[in-house]
Image 1 (cartoon, rainbow, N blue to C red):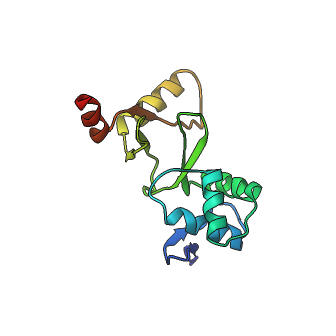
Image 2: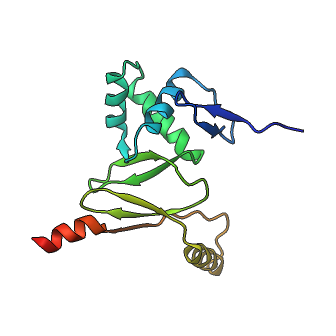
Length: 152
């Protein structure tokens, strides 16, 4: 019987190991641990600055590569901010999901949407597409920012 493969962050959080073989380096552990400390999405540059201020010597290019690898393995969510820059956050939902995003404060809410999954599969099949992936981001104002906007 095979044993489930996991890795552990410095915070003691158990994470599934990537589906493809990845070396678990001290840089990868540092990036994962830094992401575990954050609730909000962060750019590669912001994460790199945070790592440097914590004393980790991880090159910016290495942070880019690690985040890309983690995204491919489904370990982080990747969104584009208002400037079009990729921002990352540790996935808190293991299954495929989508996001509601506040365009003012950047708050993100993870949602599951079976209706979207069904529609995407039917639409792809109707056009002969297979092995389909999709991303849905619904952008608007969160309740707090809506209240502030209404007060102005």
